[in-house]
Length: 546
Image: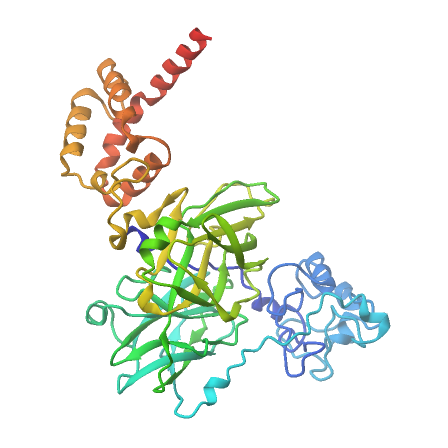
């Protein structure tokens, strides 16, 4: 159950859409080479904002992120037109909240025009003109059905970031495969992501959550609804599953889903409401296989500040995959996931210790949605290793960054859509430092120890070995107090020899005890009361022998 609290956490990034209001026609700047497409992050290299800035963005930042006469009179892209002329304020008189002098003929102040001219080619080399809209011919298949699921109009809280969830009923008049979805966004200024989870325990889900009523929730999915079926992130136009598979919904599949909304309201606006949702495409013409989502990566990060590049590594080991998989599975899509400090991520496949392929390997920008699609799909066999490496940049940080759901926390996950679902037992294959978390999972209970430690027994305060340990610590030691002679002797000669109090196993025991067995913390404090003196004794012994 420890694994269940960490799957598919998604962080908030600083909002930028509100900055559109700081410049004339900020929400009306066209893409220079894509008709009917608005360049939403006007000052950024990325169409949807975030990450590195373009020439106009650099000048805008230097102007204090305000529209000033000096900024208006600049020619940021060097094409002979001032920023004011390009944004509809040629006289440089526009004031925030007013209508600009012109709303037609607007051009991008960070791209040189004419865009395709030889003189502008070098200056515009950063502009990506490749179309990335989701193409899904299956939506037009004979018999295809669709339904748009929205939350009722809801007031967005006046907080910088918040998660709201809603339980919804899926079509149950037949047996279907969910094969595609697209966003139905009502308020573009607050929506950062929408996730949809299939409810594995429908009766329990209905008892636990009100139907069709948005309520504030945590970022981690609830245990009743754990299977991720779709991810919309800002910048995405939807998803389309591989032609051979779909998520089973209806009479023989998921009958309920829990939708999670992540709202980002950095201005603390009080007048925002939202009624966004997803349009689901589902077919009675069942495909060959049921699909499911597999999450790989780590549930522990400890990233130091001041690093140009710092790697966090995780592994879904051969031991774990051989127990999670009852047969081959096939990857059709994969998505890297970190937070705002992430700069690169790769997911690799190994077999018998030999590298097979990179499943993903690409630079990372949290604000620029990207996904990897595989046709033909990638085969994963029981016993294969899946290694995940995340690279972070922390030169502007002044503290160590851990895993978490806040803006200043981080993640290192890979979300992988696979089929057939029947061959995968357990939706995650994660590590905690160098420990395979599958060894604590109910599906793989044949592991008696982790690093020589029976972790499950250690989390049971009624286990005979633990009862004896606690009794002796109460007798010999004073938690949070002095280190007595008898306590030091007991810790040094009994406790320190227990593999559960060494290395990573000790770290894991301490981490889990905080939430699982709070009383255990008292006994850890008793042990720690003598750890320093024991280490000093050991150091002195080494010095004397040297």
